[in-house]
Length: 153
Image (cartoon, rainbow, N blue to C red):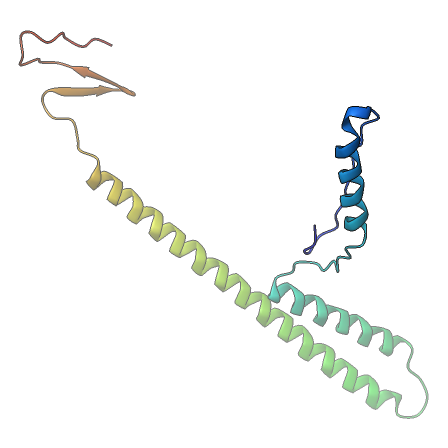
């Protein structure tokens, strides 16, 4: 209970008399749990939050442009258009930065995967003359000790 999520609790009670103590404990716990209040907030990436806020501001400016009129409306209109243009450029810059960040992460992941494969190839010994691999099974081709049984598939 608690944290950054909505929580639903179901208290399961038994009508049987031999479960009376367990039922009473469950009801006490459920009563205490009802008093817990969560403040639910949305988990959001920093870039996405900034983009969303900027898009909301662009929308607000567009609404102001549509409702303008009277003296000085053209100056306000030009100022609002300039603000909208600046915000659109800022949104594009943030999206580009986010794209570059993801590309860098993908590049690092690919490098780490290649390094991991190289390390695995170096760590796993290749079968020598005594062993040969066929799919996932190993076969013993030669046995040095005459007393030990030979392995088969």
